Length: 498
Image 1 (tube, rainbow, N blue to C red):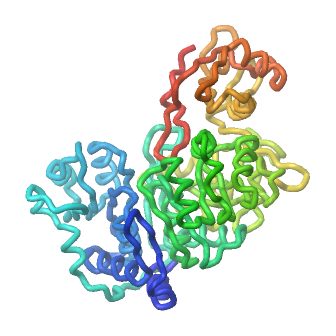
Image 2 (image 1 turned 60 degrees about the vertical axis):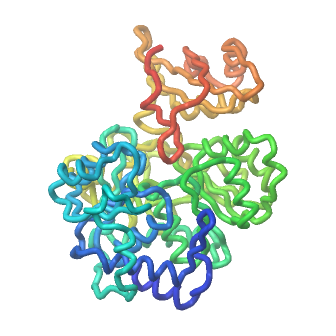
Image 3 (image 1 turned 180 degrees about the horizontal axis):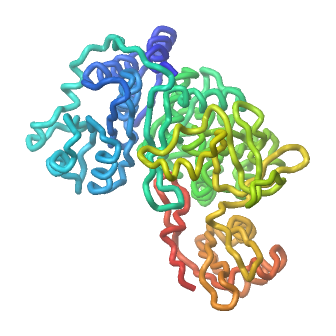
């Protein structure tokens, strides 16, 4: 993908059109091009050199990322919630030459400069501070030329390294090249009907995650308008749908739950919505069907993809009865299911092959070899099944299988059944040690406000929906569940003791 050419093209075709709406700011496509090129022209790096971006979801983050891509450099988006020590680790591991940062409490830029010998410049966004005078200010960046940078970018050059811990707990740098940036756009263009009249909303999905960057890529390629917010607030979210006539959004299941918990959600106008997509975790069909009551005209879709596959890669059919499927891998991607011996099966680990599959993990050849086969198949770690129509269904993660006395239990299946109880707002199920059975399920339950629920009542309910060995042996009622930056439940934070 040639970001530089796209910025020029859209600025010429839509100079006055709103590219970004952020709080009380409106950035047109012409302003987007000029701001991005100023960043590119300021950056004194060669093609492929790394630039770390530690910014919240603000317009300057968009300018920075597009500027890096226009320069042909490699973006290293760093989660704005990470601590100073975590940031330093990523900067040093990636060998970033420049850091673009928004200062905040707990972040000492002098300490970072001292502990990151590869850094040759730190660019500071936000209000100027006398104590930060030795660093480059954003105002200095804005003085650079707004002309298109003179650089030749190859499609196989490294475009980005996304650090993701996933379920392993250890950060790993997913390497994507410039051709990978085309993959999300190609897939959305195939599965959805996006036009330049659409309005996307990015609410709380950080640009340090591929899902956040996707919003920028969609905006630029389809010449749509992007409503941008720094964090997800369910009430502000639905207000923005009505105010800006949002037509497309992608959020995780926990965000749908938060929206549905609002008592006055139904009074807002959702008529502009064309697509409401859930991604990032297995979802409950019951939950999504409830959301459709708020927006009956919108098409609810279940999306699938990973950072390692330049997501998204698949969407459920545009039929609410198929919402529990992730659809078919019939465009730009091949898929197969294998058992432990590598045999092709109708239920097993999902493997993916295609244009979106990553280059590998940065400086981690061992993990790369474990994840990528010699003939290009990527082991996703997801357990899925395929029906007679060729539709795929995610059953759970290999790492979330619970082995109860030899029987396999998938936490997602138990969670989906618990979620059906009318008094349950949210749930998470993990496996805990058991002397007799080896492992048993434990459920963490968040009860809806104003409701009361006892363990006995929930167990009786589950007896109607689950085999006895799948019913949790332990229940813990909590006020909330821990979430990661994308809004998915972080099971690593849950207590694994019975």
